[in-house]
Length: 296
Image (tube, rainbow, N blue to C red; front, side):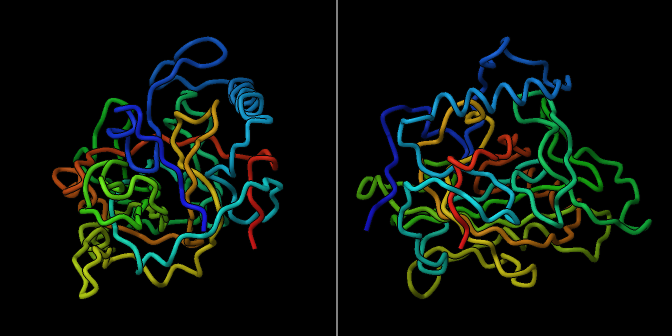
């Protein structure tokens, strides 16, 4: 069985968010963009062209994120699916502002953003009640690039590893001295933030513990948001907009959103074992069939 090869040569990989490359990069066409400026369609098109050119004939495997409702893909560099997440160790939890993946329930394009992963991605395509949309008078998960508000969409990545590890910060938490090429799986759930104390509690959604099996297990992943769409892909994050990700990851993306109380998300950002305090940027949706696997 093939294993996921993870290069450990650079310290940058150790401090990167798990399964999300958020490294700043100069655009292949014109340098870095302002944090809040909105780039033209041509910039995104140029980034996709650069991705195609930098990966053509190089042997890159299937990439992520993708439209989970579009099953076609022609990338043949496939690998064995990781075990069920219940047979793996939870190693990291983080989230992206706006969904990286596209699906029926999260199909509203947020826009091109700043060309480096912020203010882009996909938003909840349904409607909230007037009560759920009440203004929340506190800054939530505030950062240089973004602040969360009522009505915002986030995509949470529950990252799992076959290595014997303890949940923690970044990709380094998914590796061990004994196994530096573990199989990886990301259980994925998209949430919409509402101002409703009766909505889901993010601290419970991200809870975990050590099971009788000795494995660290996420105990709050929703089980009522549809059968996950499983596919073979890669790491994500805007650092891979113009270059291929060399990591192989099994993805399980739930097709329906869940509503979460924005106050509890803010509380989580104030302190958690994963050292996460903001929403990460998103990688451009991968649309090149040569960089997508076939969804069975």
